[in-house]
Image (tube, rainbow, N blue to C red; front, side, top):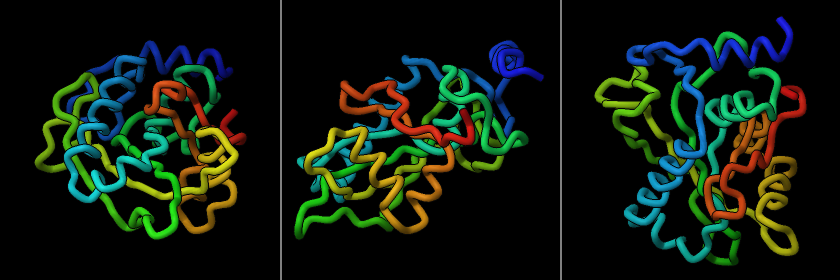
Length: 191
């Protein structure tokens, strides 16, 4: 199947997402805005994260949902794994400026329920009304680079499993406004 037909099939195969592990619904700018607002609410109302608000560099959508956005918007031609495509959950990453003596704990995690949306719910996520949103955070180097280049630098040279894992798919900017909707990273094997 050629790339155009594959992307057209993603858009035309609309189906009820309730009870499906992966949602095929297209992520549009309104959905990115919903995710941005959801993430801002999480970071502002989490006591640990709130201590780092002054160092917040960016909020991004990562992993499978970001890969799905990149495919649907034409930035990527296919998925990393053709049998697991679409949105299983939303992985949102907070990136903070690395500052001496104030490093965001890389082990911090949070999970929240997005609630009822067009994306339905994953039946494996017991107790959730909608898709699960997983939150992660990292302090990264930010000196003579813009936001996008700082994130790309971390993905390439950050070391450890997280940047290697995230760099396999895509990263989409949610916050601040100048990176909103920007595909900051997409694995070259997917283009």
